[in-house]
Each structure stands twice: as structure tokens, then as C-alpha cells.
Length: 392
Ligand SMILES: *Cc1c(COP(=O)(O)O)cnc(C)c1O
Image (tube, rainbow, N blue to C red; front, top):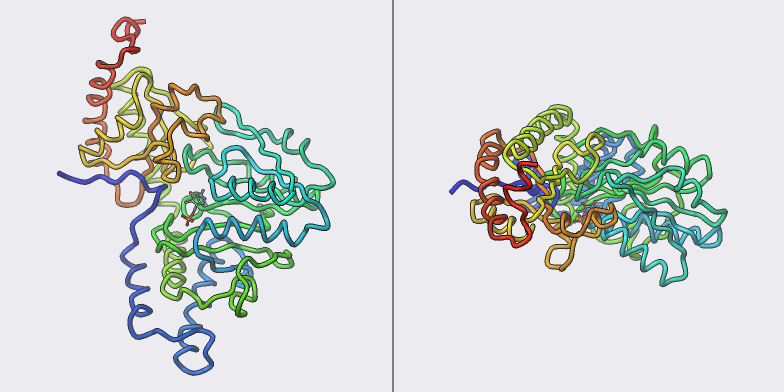
């Protein structure tokens, strides 16, 4: 049976060129980049080249890139690092109800430490209201943390407007761009972003490595104390193969983002239309236009999402319900709940996230098998109104 992977927002496979770039650093090129001798100097050169590649993707300066242990660490460093450094200026943080747990749980922890956090609500399409954002700013507000593109629905927030609001008020702006980097082009300067998180394994790079963009002059208290690596902002001997892999992944993304984005949008629309043609009672979760090119979240009414996922898995098709991070936890997705999606629709929601290895045949196969599974599951559902409703 052919295996079809449609869960690229959970993680991506390593790009073959990324693996090739990493291999020398898992073999002979083992030096400690802090060493003064030849073994260290050589490795250091590659780390700095990688820093430049990450910076290029964001239009930042290499000195503004801090390598971390992944997206979650970048989010923690941005929020805790900025909040600790600005403690005497204020204690108020603004974020949204639909952030990734790496941001939400960090903000909840900050509340335990005495910070105040506003969690902005979203509308039915997962969008925040900028007037509400403006109104929630006080003279104690030190940080806005608003994600770029949502991992579950793909909804893209108005980052440029948020950046302008933050900079006008002299508030730091952090964005978790883990899902958006590599899928949509961005410029940290025009968007007025102070802190931006990205992660290697969400853009065909390795797991366990990421980076935080830190705008020049931004005060940040480090979370990991030790040696002077990363300009004193993140101690510890560098993850050389990971960092080199992340740099290569950013370089590849920079080269073919426009093509990939167009290709994935086309596949996604085909998948969406194919499913809608064959099934009733299916709704789109997320913004119809302002959405990541690869993300399609659909609510199948009168179906249990977990059951649908398992039946698709039996057909070799890998999708997800909600985020990978919330799987195993019961109840509807907090993101869909925040959007006001009724629990029975949220429970029947499936996230298809496409990537560079998906083909038109993958889409066709999914469109061929999915409606039959949904119909079968509905036929045994006690609440499915059946033909009666399909007619009117
Ligand atoms: C995956 C993800 C993270 C966490 O990144 P890791 O590298 O897995 O720690 C953070 N934010 C978003 C939006 C994500 O999708």
C-alpha cells in the first residue's frame, strides 16, 4: 500500500540536500567551534555561514540570529527573556487564545511569576480584532506575542499591522513564525518584528534545532547560562550538524518558496474541492483566503475525527486532528473551541497539511477513499440525519 503523508505541520522529512550538508559534521568535522585551533576554526566558519542563511530568509542581519534547541525553546527565550529583562518597565503581556502550547503554557507560567497576561479572543475564522488588541494595551504592557500562521487552521494574522501598533507604542513584538517560515516570504524590518521564532523540523531541516531572531538592541535575559556561545544569549557547545542543516533548509526555502507555495495551494484547492463535491455537511475551519498555502482543516459533521483519522491511517494516509501536541489529550481542539466552532464539529475536524513530496496522485487517492469512509462512519452514527437532510 502506498503511504501518503499529509501531516507536514507536525513535522517534515529531512530534505536530501540537508542531510548531505549535515553528514560531514557527524563524521570528520567534529571540532568545537569555540576552539582556537584548526579543528574548531573550520567548524566555526560553517556555523557563521549558516547564520547568514537563516538571516537571509528573514532579511535580518546574521548578528540578530540566535541558534536554539527548537521552536519551543525559541518561544520560551523570546517571552521569558524579554519579560525578565523588562521587569522594571512593566509586567503585562498580550497574546492570543490560539497560540501554540509553547507560547500559551509559557504565558501561563509567567502569570504564576506575577506577570499579567491578556489572551485575545478570535472570531469564527480564527482572526483577532486589531481594535481589541489596541484597547488591551496599557502603560504596563511590555510584550505582544502573536503567532504568524496558525498550526491547526493555517490562519495568517495581520503581522504588519500588529508590528506597527507595537512599534508605535514602544512595545516589543514577538511572533511565533514556526509554521510560516518557508511557506511565505517575510521581512522582519518592514514587518517591524523584534523577536521571531522558527524551527528546523517544520521546514525540512533537522529536529532539535531552531533559532530566534532578536532585533539589534533588544534586551533579552538568557535562559541557559554558561559559556559565551551565541553572543552570551544561549550557552552550550553548538549543535553543529543541526545548525548546518537548519542553514541549508533555509537556503532551499529561500530558493523555491514561491514555486512551492503555488504548487501546494493548487494541490490543497484540488483536495478541498474534491471532498466538497462528494460530501455534504463539511465546513472549512480557518480563514478562506488569509491562510498558509499547505493547510486545510475541515470539519466533518456527524463523524468522530479520531475514527476518521484511524480509517485514513488504515489506507496509508497520515493526517491529524488538531495539533500533534494535543493528540492524546481528550476533548475538542482548544484552537477550534476559541474560534467558536461547536464541539460536535470540532470533534469531527481533520487537518490536512501538504508538503513538497505530495503529488496530484496523492490528492486523487485521498479524494477517492475519504468520502466512502465518511459515509460509512455516518451510516452508523445515531445522530446523522441521513438522506432526509441531504435533500434539503
Ligand atoms: C511545532 C511548533 C512549535 C514547536 O517547535 P519545536 O521545534 O517542535 O519545539 C512552536 N510553534 C508552532 C506554531 C509550531 O507549529
